[in-house]
Length: 240
Image (tube, rainbow, N blue to C red):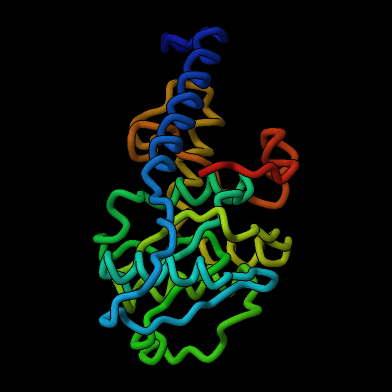
C-alpha cells in the first residue's frame, strides 16, 4: 500500500487551471513585444540597402507596405524582415509566440528562424549569398524552411514586424504536416515533458514548464483542431 500522498481532484483542476492561465499570460506577454510596422515614409534615404520581397502563394505586398518595410529594416539595420499579418489565425499565432521570444530573437545567433509564413523582406546581398531564385508563389512549408535558412545568413540582423496591410492565407494540411515533420526533433523535448505532465495528473515539475514558468505546450497536429479553442478551430484571427 503506497503511503505517497495523492492530490485531490479539485487540487488537480486548480493546478491545471493555474497552468493554463500562466501559459496564456506568458504567450500574451510575448505577443505584446512583437513590433508593429511603422507607416511608410515619403522618401527613402539614398543609403538604404536594396531588398527583395518574397511571398507565399496568394500573398500580396503593396508598394506602401514594401516601402515601410524597407525603411524599417534600414533604420534597424536588418537584412531579413518577416512581415507577419496582424490577422494571423489563432493556431499559428499561438505557435509563433511559443517558439519565438521577440525580445531576444534578433540577437540570438543560434535561434531557429521563425515567422508568420507570409512575406519576407530580404537584403539583396543575402539573396545573392543564399542563391535565391524564387520570390513568389511559395507554399507555407517552403516559407517556413526559407525563414529558418535565412536566419543563419543574417543571425543578428533578422527580425519580425506585424502589419495589417497583408491579408492572411490559410496553410494547407499538407503544409502543416511538412512543417511538423521538419520540427519534430526540436519539439521532441517539449512534447515528451508535456505528455508526461498531462498523463501523470500530478503537480508538474520544473521540467514540464516552458520559459517563464508556463506549462510547455504540446506540438500542434492535424487532430489538434478537435480539441482547440473555438477561435482556433474556426480560423479566427488574433490581433497580435
